[in-house]
Length: 154
Image (cartoon, rainbow, N blue to C red; front, side):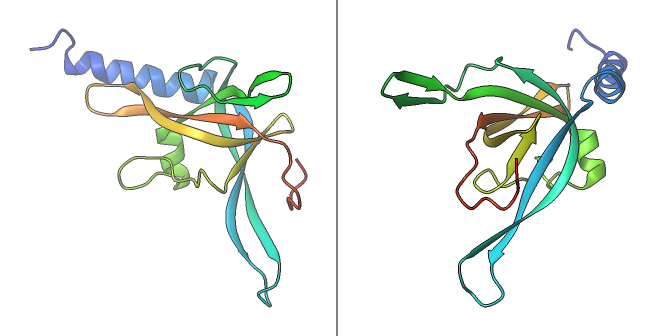
């Protein structure tokens, strides 16, 4: 027998969901979801993105377990500067969770724009674990320079 009853776990889940819905997770995040790159005549790259506005909770300069350091002539630049939490219930309502309860995004092709800064996902994980499910998911975002020929102005 555990220390927490099912009623206590249910209360915990309710608090986390309500907090994320009503008090946190309200910063607009533009998800540039990759939808294709084949042009009509098969020439050049024709990258296309859906623009989807999500609401999330941002932690700036917080997560340091997976360093993203880039060597330069003047030293290493740490590009890891943002962690974004999303409610799994919220993502599920929008249809962005897989059957295994994971956020459906393409880490290699999708971009995220927050406060006019362009980011790319560098990892994701579930969090806020209750006794039977995780309630939140987070993305570790790496700041990006605007790629050459990028079709959307960050």
